[in-house]
Structure formats: C-alpha cells, structure tokens
Amino acid sequence: MVTVADMTPLAKRSRSPLNDLDISLSPRLRRDDPVRTGAPDKQEDQEDVAGLGTQTQLQSMNQQGTGKLRMADKLKIVLVDDHGLFGRGLGELLTNCYDFNVLGAVGSIEELRVLINEQPDLLVMDLRMKPMDGLAMLEHLRKEGCTTPAVMLTMSDSEVDLGNALRAGVRGYLLKDMEPEELVDAIHRVATGELVVAPSLTVKMIEILRGDQPGQGPKNSLKLLTKREREIMELLSRGESNKSIALTLSISYDTVKQHVRHILNKLSLSSRVKAAVLFAKENEKFE
Image (cartoon, rainbow, N blue to C red; front, side, top):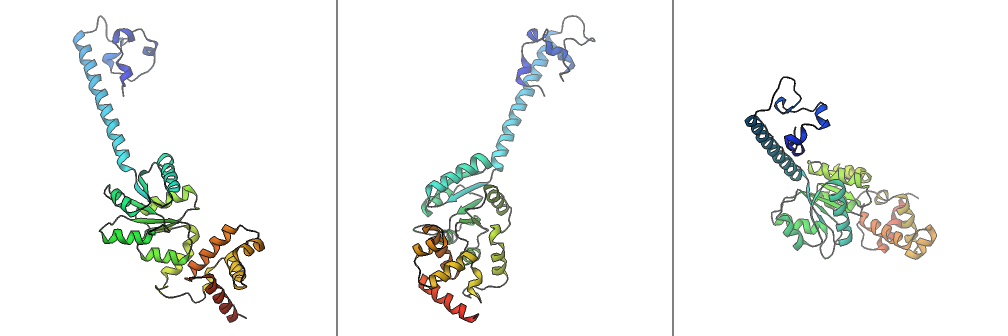
C-alpha cells in the first residue's frame, strides 16, 4: 500500500537511496527498472500519479470507515450513582482504560431519562441512593417502557438485596470492591446476555434460584452470616454498643456500622434489638 509520503515529486525521488530497497511499487514507477530505457513517457507518469492519488484517497476513506466501526462497536453504558465523585471516576476509568463509550454519570432519575434517549446498551446502577434507590428507579423506568438491561453495582452483599435485585429483573449484581478487570469482564458478559453476579455471591445466588420464594425466611438465618458477622451478632445480643464492639474486635467504628447494616439486611430485620433477640432464640435451638 502506498501512502501519501510516497507521492513525493518523481524528480526528487529518482536519486533517493530508497530506490535501492525492495519496496513494492508499481513497475512503472521504478526508475531503475532495466527494462525501461530512455526518458519516461510524460503521459504515463501523469497516469501513475493520478492512480496513486486515487489509491491514497481510498486508503484514507477506508481508515475513516474503520474508525467509525470501532466507535460503533464500543459498549454504550450509563452510570447511575448519587456519589458524583465515584461515578465520574469510574466513568473516566472505563472510558480511558477499557474503551467503553460512557454516555454519562448521573445521580437522579430525571438525568437518567435524558440519557436513555441516547439508547445505551447497559445501565450500571448503584443500589442504595437517595431520594430513590436503584431498584425503585429501575421499576419506574420499566413502567415507562425502558427495556435497557441493568446491572447493580453496590457495596451490599446482602442475600436479601441480591434476591430483590434478581426478582426485579437485573442482569447483574456486582460489588464495588471487585477488581477493575473483574468488573469490566462482568459488564461485557452481561452485555452478551449472561446473568452475572460477583464471584463471592455465587453460592447465595444458587440458593435463591434453588427455591427460596419471596417472603419466605431461611430456615436458619444465622447461616447467612459470615464468621465476623456472627461475632458481632453475639456482641449485639449482649447489648454492646458499636464503639464497644469496635474496641473488642480491634476494628474501626465505621466497619462495625457497616457490618451491622449488612446483618440487618441479610436477616430482613429493622433494628439491632431484633437482631439480638433473633440471635438469642436461634442459639437456644442448638444448646
């Protein structure tokens, strides 16, 4: 393929050292061709240059066309998160490092409705937002006729939240502490039609799909908890405060608050007092 650089005036190129290299040029442009003798025909040279111009023009058009195809092939997504810093940061990461076409990062359903008009391939939504959480927002969109697939990207690993999201028809349930490569791979898989959850939630998803019905509590709620959550539940049952639990377990106050929130979500409880009562009752069964 001859590029624009090869269109240097022929008189200047006749003595160039490049003529000694094996360059794939048309025989009619090779000045050192032993078959050709005497002065070159002016009309033929003009035809050659005209041919090169056409070829270069076609090459340029092909490159532009390829660029458009690449742009069209990018996955178009909208990020929905009420923490603007997180949304913008994730948007820049996905755009600059992973070649997504991020249409925008918004925090309200009004802003989201505007971007829906651009026909995104996927919505990546936070679960816990104010004043309207991700599932409520998705329910409104579905009633309005929006069929764009949605993924929940959240901090909550609660089985209750996972079950509610799956029943709401989301195509993915991912955690914000996933590695970027895992997150990107999961988003691409959802876009191809898969149902994807964070690796740490696979077992919980299987248990939900095996037969837990909406409104049915698990037979043994404490089995849903991690070892650390059970430790915190036990301290809660003793009436310990979050600050006291943090000192006992040598973890931060904010970490305790997060664990307590996860415990209440997993067990569908509205207060720490009810969690303490449940812990005491279920422990009695095994004593």
